[in-house]
Image (cartoon, rainbow, N blue to C red):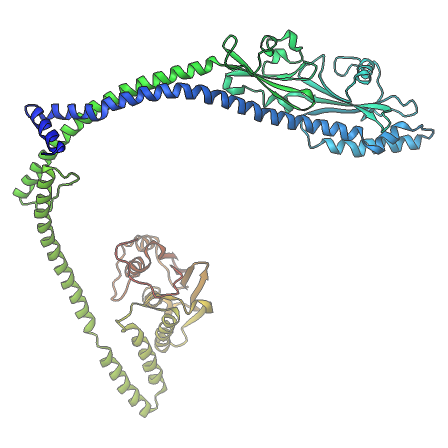
Amino acid sequence: MTLKQSLEKWIVRATRSMQLRGKIVLFYGLIVFIPTVLLAVGAGLLTFHSVRDNYLLTIKEAVRQTAQSIDFRKQSYDLLATRTATDGELVSRLSRDYTDMLEQLETVNYVDRSLPLTAKYLPGIEDFRIYHTNDSLVQDGGMLWKPEDRMPAGIRENDWYEQTLASPDILSWSNARNDPRKLIVSCKIMDRYARIYGVIYLLLDYNDVFAELFNHPFSGAGDLYIVDKNEHIIASSESSEIGNRLSSSSLESYWAHQNQVSAPINGKVLIVQKLSDGWSVAALVHIDQMEEQTKRIYYTVGIGIAFFLLISIFLVMTVLKNVVRRIRKLGHRMTDISQGVFDVTVKNRDRDELGELEVLFNSMSSRLGRLVEENTQANLMEREQSFKALQAQINPHFIYNSLSLIRWRAMDLQDEMQLRTIDALTTFYRLALNNRVNATRIRDEVEHLKAYLEIQELRYPGRVGVRWEIEDDTLELYTIKLLLQPIVENCYLHGGITSRPDAIIRIAIRREEETVHFSVSDNGKGMKPDVLERVRAGSYEGTNNGFGMNNIRERLLLYFGPEGRLDVDSVWNEGTTVSIRIPVCEERPELRRGEGI
């Protein structure tokens, strides 16, 4: 006896006295519940360590990307100020002595016309000025200014100008004294010999330059700062610290311990990313947020265990209920058969003992269903054969032979009227009595309609005019037989066209993208509103034999589905228009069998 057989025998012996409910609960607990608990606890411990490492890596990557974005923005404004300050033409004009007002005007026009164009593509520039001390050059109040006692940014222009000249930096950033949320970019205007002729002044709106990056950084799990090389805070997510020195800010106590993740201070760690020109992007991250995430993980694990416990109970009860439900359903279906209802089945998805009973039951009921289906098919075949027999009653050869005989007699009598009538009838019945095909080219349908109109012209000579509006590219497309002739026949039978003065029938066929549009219009007596409504609803039945509108609608539906449409418009005592739309058919359309009908 193999180990597998011994184990199976022991399991059967151990659970022999247990009820079905107890067996299912035991096996489900051993196979699903206990392994799920063990895996959940192990996954929670592994996730705790993984979350801490990934959290810090994510923060560092976010700081790096933010630093790149800040550096790019800073360099954009630096480039604007530097390009303006190193403009050779500007340096030349600021360094010369002016004796003519016209020369000064040319310099003002050059500055006001050329330089502002470079700044219009950068956001947040509230003021763009060029300060100079050339006594022979005026200040125009546009871009050219001289340092005086004005205070555009909370500091006298003279003081700011002297401080900028005294600074060792050619380009510098600072916060406005009267409003820290305004940024000042200063750049010295120098020639190649380091002679200074003025200062570029850019006043920037903090909100347009940096506010987007500093709005709720790290989803509220930390603060973000920009510190320049002189340890001034240029920008910060804490608006109260913008413009402060690093030594007087809350960042100072962490600055000496930057990037020391293993030893956070007060639950926070400082991560610093260096930029160009000595700037730094500092992120003060709340490491305790990670602890909150860890707690959420443990809570999730606990909730998951409780959830799977409930699921376990639910699955056990579901299995038991399913067994009972299947037995009861099988009993109900047997009751149906005992009462004479044979077309019943039981859905079978399981391969257990109940499944075998369901298969046998379905086999018995399917045999009864096949007997009913065979009986239905026999009735359908009987109706089809009756229809074919009715078609066969009209013998095309008999009609052709009879018309041929009459035509020979008319030729002997040289009766042109009879010859025209017989030729039209021959064409008409050649197409109408061809029972082998129910679809034809539009060219043949038009030929059939012309034969019918020829017969009506011989019957009512000169009373009705016919206007043809047929596009040539539609003639080789396919349509179904007897589509237009019944509609034109209604013009004579119901429209009273022959009794109308200046009677006319307009027949149009045109292609509109992937649709062929047929239109038959007359100026007969039209339809009364109640009759028109019944015709459109398909409830109107004519009093004459032949094809009606309902027959055309049914055939359009059989061959083209919803794409085949018939519309009727009529005004009493004015006329009627019948429009038919079918899809473009370059191949012979086939009868649809259920789909789209």
